[in-house]
Length: 188
Image (cartoon, rainbow, N blue to C red):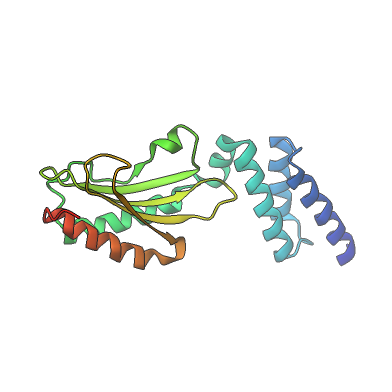
């Protein structure tokens, strides 16, 4: 097969995939064929897989999760690793929240694509701090959000700082400074 012929076929398939009119079976077949076809270049393969994955996640999320894994798998693993490190360095025994990676209610309601977080609430002062890993929808970038709340209720006097996904170290430094202040009972 000539390069121009495969280029044309890839362009046609990309157009069909991005148009959003393929069935789940057609998308699955396109994915399998893309993976196996010897004439598909690595660049074409990456473009096709990205488009197919995006369409499956948009139109057939449960099938996409079975095929590609949960969309928040990476963020959960990263936060679980970070939380294990934190619990080795900080005392979480008086945490008023569960000491685990949690899924935000807006994900459960279907309003947000990814919202995994860890939190600490001082049982005495009720001051909270959170480390969120969020993505609003398929078109939005993933973000890290650090929040501290000093008024004991959501929305009033929340302090938010947003970081790009690539700034995990910087975000974790801020979270740890907030966590230290919350643990000691220092109000902000």
